[in-house]
Image 1 (cartoon, protein in one colour):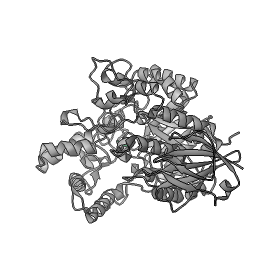
Image 2: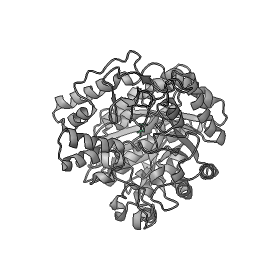
Image 3: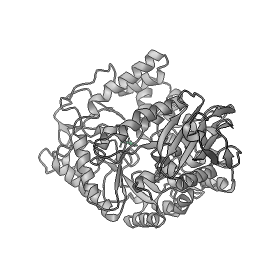
Amino acid sequence: MSKLKWWQTAVFYQIYPRSFADGNNDGIGDFKGATEKLDYLASLGVDAIWLSPHFPSPNWDCGYDISDYCNVAPEYGSLDDFKTFLHESHKRNIRVILDLVLNHTSDEHPWFVESRSSRDNPKADWYVWVDSPPNNWQSCFDGDAWTYSPERGQYYYHYFMKQQPDLNWHNPAVKQAMWDAVRFWLDMGVDGYRLDAIGTIFEDPNLTPHTVPMNLAGLRRFSDLAKTPDELTLKDKYWNDMFKNQWGQAGIHELMKELRAVLDEYDGDRMLVGEDDNIDYMGNGKDELHLVFNFPLMKVEKITPGHIRQNQQERLGRIENLSAEKGWPCNTLGNHDSSRMYTRYGNKLHGPELARLHAALVLTLKGTPFLYNGEEIGMTDYMLTDISQVKDTMGTWYYHAIVTDMGVHPDEAILRTAEMTRDKNRTPMHWTSGTNAGFSSKDANTWLPVNPNFKDGINVLDQEKNPSSLLHYYKHLLRIRKESPALKEGEYLPLHDEAGEYFAFLRQCAEQTVLVVLNFSASTLELDFSSIKEINAAKMRSIFSSAERRTGEIASKFKVSPFEVLIAEVNS
Ligand code: GLC
């Protein structure tokens, strides 16, 4: 019997509610649609859902600007619809965690409306107010970080858009109000939270200005045009220098401890996963976050065996040596903020093979995997071609900044905008090859255009019918993972550290040892594991292969096909 908690062995699946399934044919995803798809998720084999924000919001940042923390956006349904979704998920043994946005609210949240109404109202100090901008800080989405409010005759601070004012977390009343909202959903039975942008909650108390010789629009443009190694290094330095005083400041640990204490009041192992890769936010292993994402794994242009080994070496040792209790890793290769995995790590020649390889990576490494909706059918980025289609406000802001202030030609500006916005990876899910990819009925005008490649087999229904589809591959791999104690719980032991073309490792626990080989090359490789003691004295049996390999015994020397994923059980 596993001693691990449910969130350690679970596979999570992120639902981006606006784009997942439209149950009432208004072109926007909703709970009715999502609930109808729960059988699909159960058949896929996922154990938990991370639901991106489903709260009422004016949608300047697609739901990450919340105007009521204890309700459901009307376009997604009612609170009862949410309860049905939660209940039906639990009925299928699928847990549900919500998105918790702590740093800021919407400027339409009643807390902010009251706060900005005067300098002496009861919530006057709930946000970060100053008489005049004290420095040159930028918002990471839309220019100056200080915006004037005529009602109050003062400026408020916002790390994100001006419609997302930062809460003043030094004020205990803010904490109380937010913890009440946290309890509201925990009382209803949700299983935990993904914590949004925790690094941005506190700012440098000295308000130290940044030293970058340009503003946000200038830096984005500089980044677009940077080509030489020196320019690329300078670009990274500028991004860091521009925001380092607004990020990762003192206070976050204490706050995470308070929030953890709220979660720990509840039974059922409720959990927290932070949108941050800083292992320090796991505290001593039992007093802050349960998980933080391994973003360094995915934040590269290309995933190579060397990169994975180095990443695992850097993180696992630290995670396992927290002072009170061992921590647990958490891996992902995509979410609603990043280019889709298929596009980002694929190439024109070997897209399908690479998609399988990367899926296997995230599902076999030690740790809790997070998948992003649509990844399992190989959805790709979709580049918008007209500024009127763009919904991601950071994109429209940038477009206008470069066209109006910098004289960039609109044709170039839309290319840059389509590339930088997150609309490209948020288009509606493809369910069928019918109109609107079965996301909405044919008459509906979907909130973002549907990527036309749904007609080329990139949809659930076609792939369900095709045993060699990517969807079947995911289902198979998820089943193998579920049945394998070593893949769920085992320790990670890297093999053949020098290999540049393939990544091989063991996962070992008391009941089982498995060997995983991921061939990142387009060549057939002859591999020899006879010097590995765990393998030498053992018999190996293939339990999963992406190539045409038959399951059955294999020797310690064997060949792997180009891009093959091989999982073999090692019996001593
Ligand atoms: C997080 C979210 C992102 C959002 C931002 C502000 O990074 O993932 O989508 O825009 O926080 O809330």
